[in-house]
Each structure stands twice: as C-alpha cells, then as structure tokens.
Length: 336
Picture 1 (cartoon, helix red, strand yellow):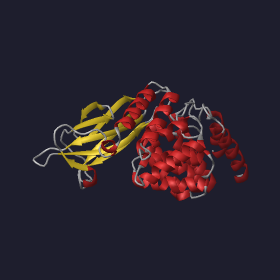
Picture 2: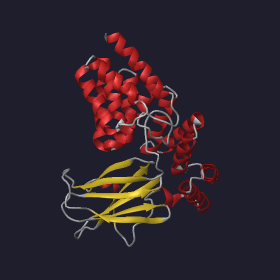
Picture 3: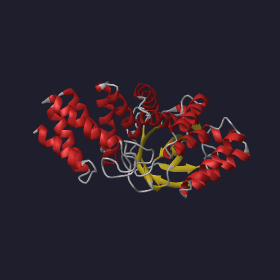
Picture 4: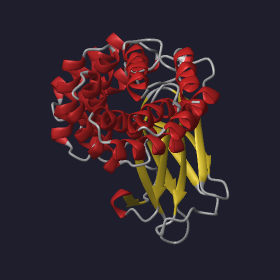
C-alpha cells in the first residue's frame, strides 16, 4: 500500500513540476516552476517593529517605504508594532522605522516584493548594524547607491520604472547598461538575475546572481533567487545549501522558507524540510499554501498518514480550486 501511495505521489508531483504557468493552487508564479504566487501583478510588505529584547513595540512609530526614487509611502505601527504596505509593484524596497526619544534613530531593512505574495519582515530596534543617527531626511537605499556613479544610477532608475510597467526587455537592457558602467553594482546584478529568472533564462540568471553574491556575501535577494534557479535546474543539493544560507540571513522570509523546504525535501532532509515548510505557511499564510502540499508529500514519504491527510485537507481548504485538486482528493481518499 505504501508503494502505491508513493507512485501516486510521484505522478501528482510530476504534474505540478511540469507546469510553467498554471500551478497547484491555480495561480501563476513570477519566478517560474513550482513555488506559487498570485496572478495579480502587485505585492505587499507586512511586518512588525520589535524591541531589542524581541518584544514588540506598543507605541505608534512611523514606518517609511523607500525606493531609489525616494519615499513611496509611510504608515504608523499599531499597538503591537504591526504595519503593512499594500498594492506594491514587484521590486526592491527599503523599510525604515523611526525610533522615538532623545536618541533618535532610523533603523532600516531591505526587502524584495514579489507579485501576489506578501513579504514578511521584522525590524529589530536593537540591530545596531542596521541603525544610523538621523540627520535631516532619511537617505535613499542606505549604503550602496551612495557609491554608484550617476550614469549607472540613472540606468537603474530607468530599469525600475520599466519593471513597474512590466516592460521586462527594457528593464533588462537598462540593468545591463548600469552594470557595464559600474560592474560592482550589486542591486543591478540582483535585479537582472531576477528578471532573467522570470524569463526562464536560468544559466544567465545564475551567472548574474553568483556575481552579486561574490560582491556582497550578506545580500539576501540574490541568494534567494539563485536558490530558485538551482531548484528549477534540479540541482537540489546545491540549492539546499544556498537557500539555507539565505534563510540564515532572513529567517522571516516566507519565500525563502518555502524554496528551502522544497530543496530539502528533494534531497531527503525531511526534518529540515518540515521545519522550513511549516515556517513558510506560518509566515506567509494562504499566499504560501503550497507549503501544505509539500508537507503532505513529506509526511507520505515518512509514512505518517495522519499528518499527510491533515496537510492535504488544509491545502484544499485554502485553495479549493487548485489545479491539482482532483489528484489531492484522490490522495485524501486513499489516506482515509
């Protein structure tokens, strides 16, 4: 019986893996392949501001969302430190939380927004490596852009505008020009890698993303996207290593946890896969319900029928019209 279940599982999984536009929950992903995103073209940022001891702030703090062009939006935290920015074009942003009191600081964190999926972040006020004294208006994109030549910065801004207008080829052209002017432009290489990934040009994407990582070993976005590339290339062992490092840099990334869980599952590291997939669904909610599908696979591989059944049933409650709903219902019937 167990072998029969595995055969059905492999059949179901192969159907999911072969989809390039329609995915298990009936949506279209941005990056390509098996992890899912909504058909919409917008994303969002959800987060909390935490105190140095890990507790959440109870006061209303101003939170600003920045792009290379300046302030995109601002919000104020609620009584539990929560904030949210909705209807955002995919791309790279910087979120700044302004502290209060005599020691007035701006604490910053970079975040990548994906189509149809919330990006989840936590800004810790005790993270001194991200803090700087406030002097006038907050700067745009703390760090790298200050060192970028004017011509390269202009091309990057044009690329960002083209991305927002879904003009992918134009964005790629501008990003290549920015890099030719300034080869050390980490953000441009990361964005170019993401654009090439979206087009399915995996080898080219990997080259740009690896270059970005060599330039900045602590950059999260290129590591996440490189991990996605490697998953798509079925280089699961390397993907698991790259994504494990990405998750260590940003444990609150639901996308990072999802891809890491998928890679760990593929290489048979079931304990790590379970941890990442559970975290992905916990952080991302229904937007990352595909984690439940992979958890169902994981538990079936372990012979844990009860948890497999629970995961598949919850998956269908979250996405009842999923493209693979019929196959999942057959699995549920077999597990009962």
